[in-house]
Image (tube, rainbow, N blue to C red; front, side):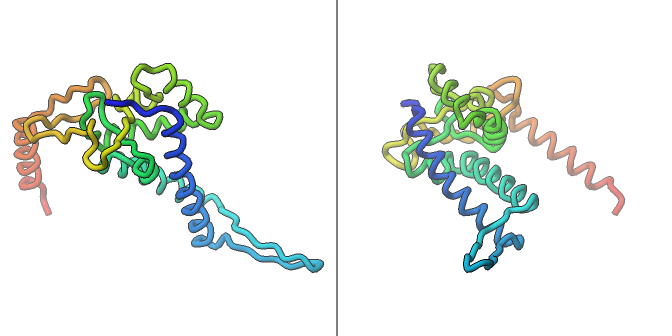
Length: 191
């Protein structure tokens, strides 16, 4: 796997940032934040994004990152630049790992992403703090879909992501036992 450097990741972040800005403008307008004033021959107009619009935009953008990376392995910005998020073994990440890596984006984004840049520069696998916590890497994807480093898991290789270990232990037998317990509970519940 060829790990992505700071420059490519930054360009992908800028592309996603443009999308984030456009979404913020839309949310500001959708929640009634547009204004226009005229005084002394000057005309002013703009958008004021209130608390609701700001929180809704942040929530939507967090969901955008989690779903894009957890399901497709890349955001629009990463796709344009040719990057993909994979686990440390080169497999597709799940939604759990995507949530963890993007929750830590708050820390990585401090001081205009200097924290993330330093983490990437000093990591042998080019990982920011969110990548380290989620056991993920951002790799170059030069040939499109699927990425050279992207290996979809076979049904027999399915693993779950946990915070304590990267290797999951939830087997098909565990799933079937949980399913039977859920059915018994459902059948015993009064309606």
